[in-house]
Image (tube, rainbow, N blue to C red; front, side, top):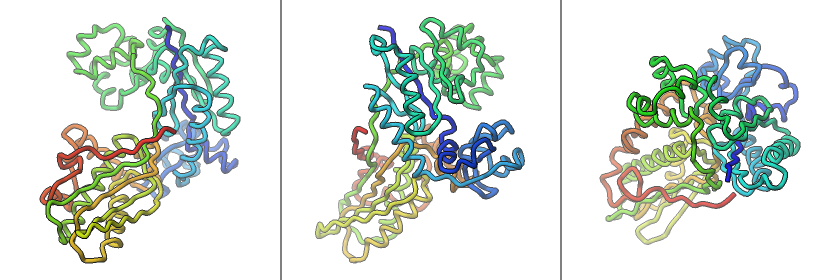
Length: 404
């Protein structure tokens, strides 16, 4: 059976939500992110992009490129609300979908063409989303996820594009290799150094040469450039919480060590959030004393996955909880109310230096392991008792799941 995969992407999502809230933002250059000179652009309108403004750019530079832009701080909770609105509409309309980010979805429409046709179904769904949410959305339809995602990008803003079965290579050929999902700035520089600028060139190269030159990424780029992608649409499941605990072999009252362990837990779980493209809105700390009395305290916070924010709340909760001066048997940390979203959502608060620091640390962890980089205060975490933490060789964090 011929596959029919649609990719849907809300256009300039943060900007579109802000324009729903304030119609005076319509048609003007709008930048969302940190409002100080050291802040970072989280999102910007098409009017601002015309001046060269881009996401992750320092706000100071964006202001120089587009002096007339309106710059506002983002509202992550409001964006999450609208993301759920759109998710509910999609869930009500199609049997199988994947939510790949806060504003991006893959839909498996295979077999639904026997009713009204997959193209018409996708068009009807687009119209329904725009009518019920008020947000503009674009989509692409093809036989696989890669081609559909690229088609969506070509259809923006507020458009749609159908790449018929068998026309994938001609559609992709004239496009820049930067259009291939997974080709970032560094990979693009490497490809340009090899004289590869267009997908057409990738299609003309032998697979063996691409793999020999670039390793496994070269093989992936070649396959995507030739319109080959067999990856399935993964049924959407929203993680409800992410947690970890440590039970000590010998109960302890060493407060600095306890705090060190909690910081290490908080830091590693924050990395797990970012690795899973998640942010959380609730932090909890758990203490079990030697008499087995267990106490938990939690706090709601703006959505984040930033270490320095989460660690601060974990330390505050621990200091409120630990007031009995008894030996401690167990400590734990839990992040809950998770939603799909990246470090981008923290750009409303963080400076360019902080964003770059997290990205650099995560690259090191991705390459060398979870414990390759950590704060000095957490270095002593391995020296007490038995660990149930991922950074210390124990089981992975506990994930409570539910279907959305």
